[in-house]
Length: 221
Image (cartoon, rainbow, N blue to C red; front, side, top):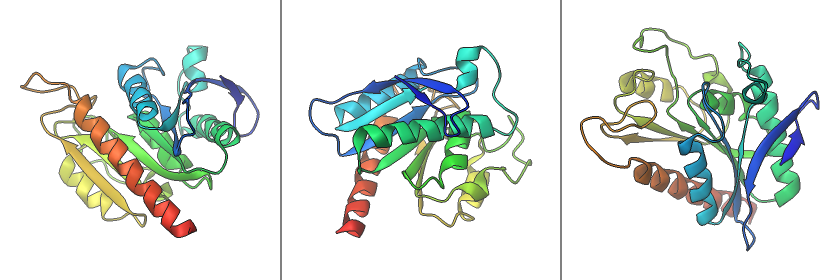
């Protein structure tokens, strides 16, 4: 699929997992700074969503196709994501739409979360601070989180000290949930054990979306 950015200054590409039956929700999945929509975690989240009755669109930020770099403040990437959300809204109609981002993509989701078409955001390994530097405070996107949020975090992530994360979560005005994946790093690679951590991630994400959709439907009834 190709669709315009939010300000129509460019074009974004993505892959939409279509369903045989009507989906009960939609999900846009974004990648981290040094990868793209072919990343295994991004691809597996989109496929798990489709298997669960959720239409999933995994997308590239424009810089990934241009072989460039992300914008310094991620405003360009925010426009890319908002364009993907608008595209999914046109495709799916009035069902709840969510955004999920891996690492830097989670920061972009935070920036875009005020979009009226976004029902909630999912952060997969939020980079709360520079690597091994939890003393660096005030993540710039944090005040922009305006919707219910799920944080899925490895407990051995050098970019997100869990004590710091708990402190920051207390500052959020929107409802939020945290799922910690034990013995897992920034990309949820297992530490000290051999296991597929994705099974834990998938359960956390799909269960959370179902709960949020139920809340949305209760408010509209």
